[in-house]
Amino acid sequence: LVLVKLGGSLLTNKNKKESLKKTVLKRMAKEIHSARKKSDVNLIVGHGGGSFPHFPAKKYKVNEGIVDKKSIEGFALTQDAAARLNRIVVKELLGAGENAIGIQPSACFVCERGKIALSFLKPIAEMLSQGMVPVPYGDAVIDTDLGVTILSTESILRELAFKMGAKRIIIVSDVDGVFTADPSKNKKAKPIPEITRDNYEKVKGYLAGSAGVDVTGGMAHKVEEMFSLNDFGVEAQIISGLKKGNLEKAILGESAGTIIR
Amino acid sequence: LVLVKLGGSLLTNKNKKESLKKTVLKRMAKEIHSARKKSDVNLIVGHGGGSFPHFPAKKYKVNEGIVDKKSIEGFALTQDAAARLNRIVVKELLGAGENAIGIQPSACFVCERGKIALSFLKPIAEMLSQGMVPVPYGDAVIDTDLGVTILSTESILRELAFKMGAKRIIIVSDVDGVFTADPSKNKKAKPIPEITRDNYEKVKGYLAGSAGVDVTGGMAHKVEEMFSLNDFGVEAQIISGLKKGNLEKAILGESAGTIIR
Image (cartoon, rainbow over all chains, first blue to last red; front, side):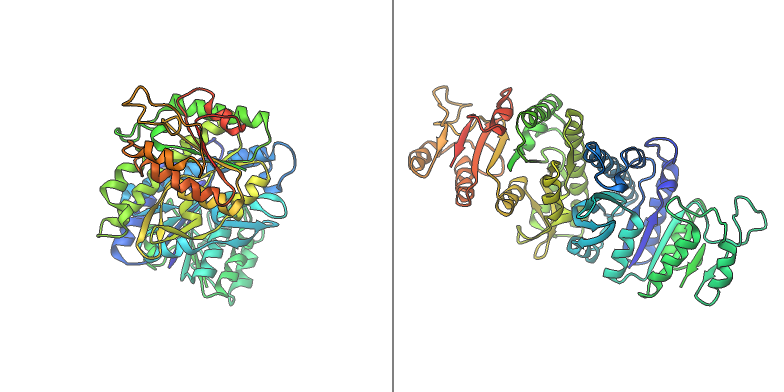
């Protein structure tokens, strides 16, 4: 079992409400199908919400829980926007030839203070055993403490990796792994193909001051989260989806971006 | 708690793929919101799939389970079509002012030989307690025996009625309750406002040969299903959504169509 996370900023234009990077999405879907034809790997393809749920989530502060009378409305609008992007992603995967099944996280996960407290994974497990490709996504979900919260795609995939015994999780964004410096600012930045506990102290030095790969946290934080996956036997791979063929290679277990193990 | 079922044939044109009866849908959404403004009733609004999932479900015989190599594709396409209609229904409810949350049945129910065997209802229960309106729908779901199956909106709502203690379930279609004869064929057909165990023998005589309210079963079968709800303290009401104001009245507990208790 391999888990793929398609970053929200890879699929949508971050600053423009409900904008779609359709060419990238189409290519991702084709690479996934191409890899699946060459190998019988079981896949879960999660995706971020980007500029679909981002705007209502931010406006209504859904990540802070139920803070005022408008919070429920914000939850409903965030939910709907996230689910609408999911339908678009599923449509592209179906079009590419995959039996993709959108999975609504708010119907099968409940959080407590932002962390998954209850999950119902039987449908996903059965879908995988029948060769389908479940497609969960970052969603606004019920929180027994805060009322509501935001559950990120990565939190969902980590939960699925632990509970279902994944071999590898592939994080696809617009940065091709971990570099010795911020590649957008420093032309001498070099990619780091592999990070292990042995070379992490050195890598940590490089990451100090990094711009980070994602709005949800800096690269150092991300690498450390990946180590917690390693403890459960799950490798993590950070790749760019902007490099043609990268995702297909990563699914097939070939070298691309940075592997953390 | 009141449960509403909007029939698939009320929302879509049965014979035309993915056609929408948008005027009816918009009015249903407005009546739901209007009733909610007048009363603090908790609502779950389920809807059938009509001509959205009907075509792939029939083509691939999804209700028979995994019968051949194409069954998984049929499941994926049926799923997607059902979920797309759900987004349209949710959009109209949001537009009318309700905090509607689509609920994907295949993410929170698992069947065994066509009957619900496992369910995860915590999210729905919490959404209700926060005043949201969960919106489930007839869906293609995992079946531990058949592989896959079709789970009807009514089966879902019956399960929710039992587990959550609903007061009433309102079945909205294009027939205004139970009649003494088929009203489309017999001008002398009279509505029956109330069916109880006391008058059911007489009603049964009327129903013999009825054209039925729904493609999924005749009216007699439907009434008998409703009696099984009555045993759990749940009243059932069958109304037409084509009569303006009917749904609002029914939600508010006023007389409309036929009540079975």
